[in-house]
Length: 202
Length: 76
Image 1 (cartoon, chains in turn yellow, brown):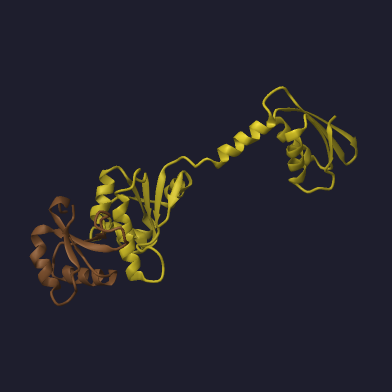
Image 2 (image 1 turned 180 degrees about the vertical axis):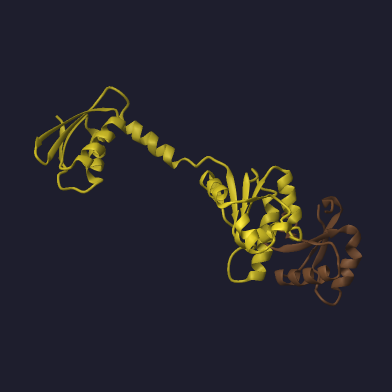
């Protein structure tokens, strides 16, 4: 009654894919593979799907794995749940990454207008971003003469955190002029980006 | 800066007009802020200049003959 699969000669991840597919409809799958990496991968798949796994080696380059579903959940339901979890929107803070003091390409003058408008409208976002990161020419928006200083200050008062790249303010020689947020470094910036649920890069 | 309730906005015929007006008004030392046109005024994309109401005369005077004003409306 077991489904027999001969996966010898097939490249990774074929053995795992074939096994998974078979287990969607079969209660027992016997699969032949020819290398021990495939053995490990198929064994792990079986265990994750709640199967008992027996392995033996009938020949020099032939490993046979016998996967039997145990009473536990249907692999179908299990893999569906995993897929659903992967498809769900990422949770985590909203981060806005401002890498330029302009928005879009083609006209610097228009771009600057757009970026100023964008920053102004961030105030009406719900929820507000958790963090705004400024780097490259974006740091120029944070100085005391900035046209958007009032908007940034209001965002800061409302709890938005600003990370202003230290390398960049140094490069543009404006370290003393930064009027909002805190001078940060690439470690914090990279970490903030990696932990974000979504990153908006206008 | 300025309380929204006490502000007006001056609307222009194009973004380029607004940009030119901004430069003129800044050069005249007036307190203005370039913002997207508030949604209750227009749903089209565009920018306008917001200023404290008491500066209205000065704003109009500075733009006289230089940039066509489309309309002045209260901000709120």
